[in-house]
Image (tube, one colour):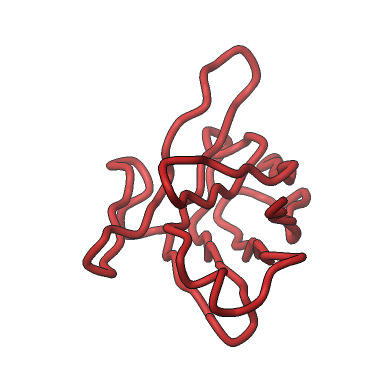
Length: 118
C-alpha cells in the first residue's frame, strides 16, 4: 500500500519559515507520478483543511490565507512534495498532512507538527 511520510515540522517564531517534505515511500517513480498531491492541516479543535493542492493541469491551488506565503512544489525524481512556508504566524499552528490521490482513493501521511510561537 502506498505510504507518504512527512518531515520538516517544528517550532518556529512568528515571521519565520519552514519547509515541509512528503516522500512517497514503497512506490516506484512511475507510480508516484500518478498521484495528485496536496497539503492539508488540522489545528486543535478544528477540522482538517486544505492548504494547497496540485490541479490536473499541474498548477497549484492555495487556500486564501496562505496565498503569497506558502509555495507547494514537487520533485518527481525524489518522489517528494514540498511545502515552503514563509511569514508564519500563530494561526498557522497545526498538524500538517500530505495526501496523495489516485484512482479515486486518498492516501494520507501521518502528519508533522508545526508550532508558531514566540
